[in-house]
Length: 325
Ligand code: AMP
Ligand code: TRP
Image (cartoon, rainbow, N blue to C red; front, side):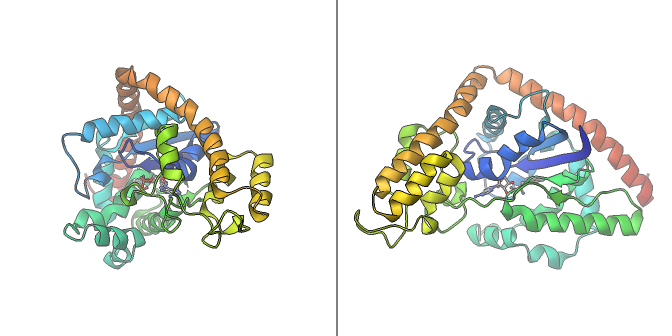
């Protein structure tokens, strides 16, 4: 077991998509093999946009079940809900005083979300990356497996750690992204895959639902007719093959596309077969977990209890260094 701690977070939604899976969760499962890992379902981050209070708890539980179904099993890591460890919020406030406002207004995700939710550009949305830094550093984690979209937030977390250490004394490591930072494009081929844009393929979707979305999805724009030779390197669908289709079948698609030997529909059928085969075991485990929600709640609660012990130790150190008693 390596002594560097791993921490990462995910929004509380059951509609976890293959972008989340490939960009984050798949790496998380790998890291559990030889690291102490903390994974958090970020309910306090989620309230920075409008949400349904009546279904919120169900969404949190569903998010936990999908993550467990993907391989984050009890005994391999801690998986817990952010608000169950209130020290995240306490450190968040401390870190707010170590963060320059100009850095926050410059964040790409803030600008995007402010545009998407223009009637609700609240201070929580602006301060979002401060809480994210607190999530990571409350456990003194130094490895953070995230998709490419989160690298800017991570850079800010490093700045916050540096600023705190300089002002008050060394406590925090400077956390870094680990693994390959992937960016999975959505079915529109233009934006990153994201639930809010509706261009996603959900991990829990049935083969029929997936085919309904794949069949009309964009391919190489120059391939208009079946007889036109295609350019797989310009095709969004081909990028998915790179994640799911075994080498020989992928090469077959690559070659045949260029010779117009197969059409886009044939290529999508091959992808569909391998994508659904990859998702089937996850969906099977998810259905089993649905039958035992209490074991999932026990895992979340037990993880939060263990995480909290560490979080309290860090906060005691922080208060001591800062002259707070
Ligand atoms: P979120 O659902 O926004 O909380 O994202 C959870 C994790 O999935 C983060 O590490 C993101 O970087 C990652 N992620 C989300 N969307 C994508 C995407 N389209 N491609 C790669 N990674 C992603
Ligand atoms: N902001 C991340 C996202 O939108 C989620 C997140 C919250 C996170 N806290 C974190 C990721 C801590 C890594 C570490 O995807």
